Structure formats: structure tokens, C-alpha cells
Length: 143
Image (cartoon, rainbow, N blue to C red; front, side, top):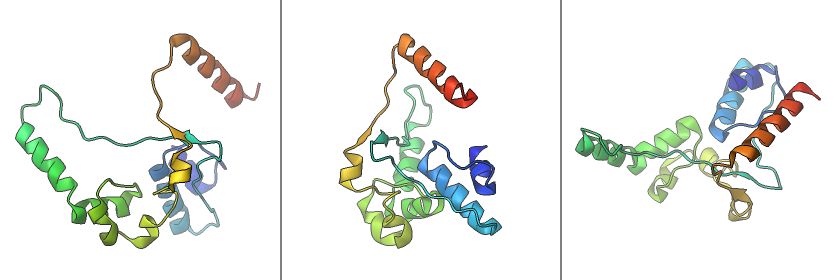
């Protein structure tokens, strides 16, 4: 919902995945109503996230799964995926095949100095999770 809310100007700030924000930006531009959207990683740092392709341990079509992953990661294929969704990809061979506006966008491929300020989430103890939930509830309710 926050993608359409951003694109329509119903909300002015959101914590979200880069690809979602890029999608909202594209929708806003298509609508032509003067809604300008930008994605930023705070100077203090932010959550580093990534999508993963995995094959379940009990998968029945393991060879086909490997074939699909190998296909998807081919430079000419993953370049098109990155261009469409606005997500970085791990294949340096795709760089020259991508739209340069995406490949050179620091929001898609942050410089090392920005990456150095990011972190990967891990499961927190229940006590900390409760505290975070209470804190977010206070923020959302304005209390």
C-alpha cells in the first residue's frame, strides 16, 4: 500500500525497500501530478537487505531449479531484471547491458562509504522485539 500512497502523494515519507520506492517514483512520474519521490539511506546508516534464490532441501526438481537460477543470473537476463525492478544484481557482466541511469544510481548501487554504514538485521530477543513494537506504536499513534 505504501507504494501507491507515495505515488499519489497520500504520504510524504516511508521506510521501505529501494525497489518499492523506485516503483512509486515511476508511478508518480507517469501520473504527472507533481509528486517527486527520492530514495535515501540515512547518513547514520540503514538496513542492508537482499533477495536470495534458494532451493529447498526437499525440492523434487533440483536440476531445474539450478537451471532457472543459472538462466536468471546470465548477464543479459539479470540486466533486464535490474532495469525493470530497480534492484542491484551480483553479476558484473550485466553492468554494460543495464540502463546506465540505473547502473550509476547511487541509490541502487551505493558507494562503499555508504555500504560501510549499513547492517544486516538479525533476530532480536523477545524483550527487545517488544520494546521495538511499543516504540513504533508510539511513533505511529503520535503518543
